[in-house]
Length: 532
Image (cartoon, rainbow, N blue to C red; front, top):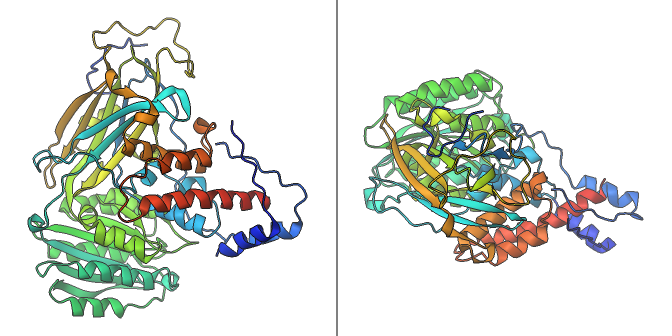
């Protein structure tokens, strides 16, 4: 394993501290049956250790406990099924931690959300009848020469501005006392103001606020009345406890009363997630929103604030409400989510998108899905249209990575069973068979897309598509932050070199910012080790 020795002078250390403010038929016949780098820190004074600790603010954020996906034996479990995840909250939250000089807790790092923070130049579908197709790449893993990575990329159909349906939006704004700080309600109001400026005259906005009680701040108002909408936003003030359950109930009622066929009817909840009055139990809130899902009203969640962020609740509510979860830590992120990516944020082009892949046991011995731990589905869920899954918005890209180990690779971790051998197959030229299910928005019956993953598409990492290499770099970073045991032979310098050669077209600088985060992570980790 590579080890990085970092030498810091006292001036450098002081500067760093100061800067830290089983149901489907099988295609193939199968018989039944980060480690982090070490830092030499001897001789450092207790004073430096104290300064490092002072750079780390108290953290009371709440996250769902996640255990990394394990390696699966193809002869025993050839089929992998999961729901797509187009959320991006984890990446922005990880960035916030690093910019504050703190390593994020492992459960704050959802690798798939970090990968999907970035747009990828996958081929766009020709029309809305089949709103996406899969772009595949197969290449050698940069952290294990005996394994390969299978990249599945999906690009949603982009609705032309002139074809965009009307937007019927209800802003549900948390105005409780916990929202007083500048990175909460003040940032929230400025963020929503950006979205208001993008409205067309025929769109409608309503505003519901909740604190010790919930109420309608603005009845549904046409987008042509921007001054009235902005004035209502500006009048919002923080104070009181959090009647989140009451607010959600009122927002849905308002959206349902003014529901419009053919329009996008959506509640956008903006909060630090601190629900403590009304329906405060996350399971009860989730059940309530699941019950409202049939109304055709979507729910998206925007998280604000630090130190008391209830990411667990926000993730559950967004998933239950057929929407996305984003974290807004600054105005640039607000612009990215609500202006630059407004189409993918507000306008769905495919609902309940599920991916299922069956690996050929004659070619692949083992596989591991990287990320998506909270989105795993049972095999039989794939064909069950009653099972909820993720949504894709207009023009949005979604990426998934599998690490796979060929049958003859020395990197295999699991021995073959003595009495069970893979059956002979006439499809040795196929690595796997990919199936995708989705529903058109408003429809109840899913549609199926299928395609093979061919062995002859395999290449070395260095000659893999640029977009695949960049996504791999982001996946590697996320796994290092989670201290994944599957990626011990890669360090942050390796990831930086990988990302730098795959940066490609970067009009808004998001990929350049990722490179800076890698450098920052090295410094923050050094401070963390100095502090003991």
